[in-house]
Length: 124
Image (tube, rainbow, N blue to C red; front, side, top):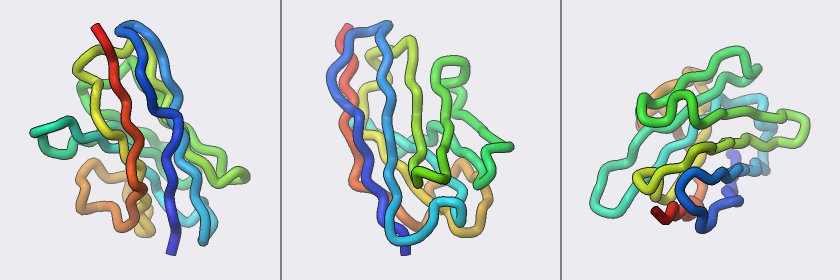
């Protein structure tokens, strides 16, 4: 099975940018559709973005459309989330997830493998 490790989180001012990375090991990333989710304290896990195995299809949650971009480099076994124009409401723990059925889904249940998460804090 694949193991996922997120990095790149931190503290940023509102309006700033961060790029999250999700490094995969154990199996080639090309075998999976990949997604990013986030969870703020006291809230349910929220879909952020997803990308197909070949990068042809991407989809985004309504709250991040036009500000966030998901991408992947299968040769480096890494998925990225570029986050621009950050807002205080983007503060959350961000998780990457892998789906071996290649669905590019927006539900947590669509994904079988998860990383430990990386904290993103946006100060206003």
